Length: 180
Figure 1 (cartoon, rainbow, N blue to C red):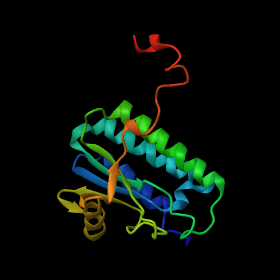
Figure 2: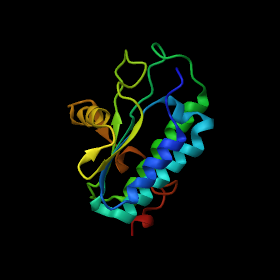
Figure 3: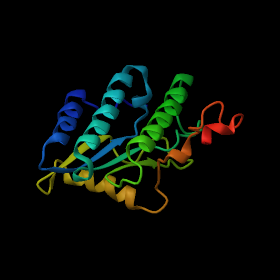
């Protein structure tokens, strides 16, 4: 795995722009496995919080399209990875799914898509990015268009929903009164 071009200062600057009124959309791609490394946990959490806060504050006036990995590369095509990466991957998906249920029921302004890696792919086909649409102009129109093209391609992504994780809790099956 090569070191990605993730500059925390650029990410923070672009995320701060989500609160500006003339910003109407954002495309956020976090598909490099480096996001699952312990050194990037704080930045990953910061991005999560910034996107949720912007969505809550701006609502439907701000469209956020986010792309994360659906699955990690197969062991046969990817270099060996630590078990901590697998745990971080599962935890992140669970947290994002739970947050999407709580924060965006029925809303189309904040969508999380999971990029499906095929069996022979060792990495995502699109680079990590935060691209902002301000007054009809993307910060980098080519990168934004490539990410949106992937989202629009049939079978390339799948939405992250609350159905993907068990939010029932440990006593849901044992005590049906939790549904009353």
